Image 1 (cartoon, rainbow, N blue to C red):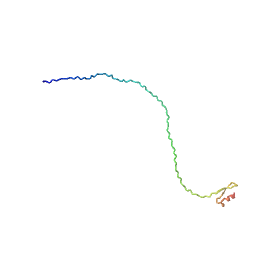
Image 2: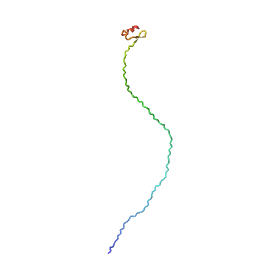
Image 3: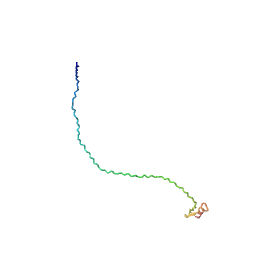
Image 4: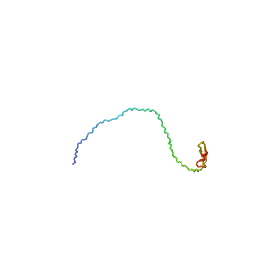
Length: 109
């Protein structure tokens, strides 16, 4: 005997795919006119300020060293002049007169 084969079919539902048309969005470039700005420059003269360097004056204190010079002292006799009371004329009296108070000179006037 020959075995018999039996086929069993099972119905499975398959989802149906629909074709939907999606609209395409296109962006179109617009031309926009931009106004051009024109700058008109005016030449303005700016005075130039010069910088002058002023010298600073500094006073420096100097130290001086005095040299000591030995000067010999000499005793010199100088005649004295005495004025007489009456005539008002000068008259020389010697320092080495006989009297200590100048009495010789006073007598001569």
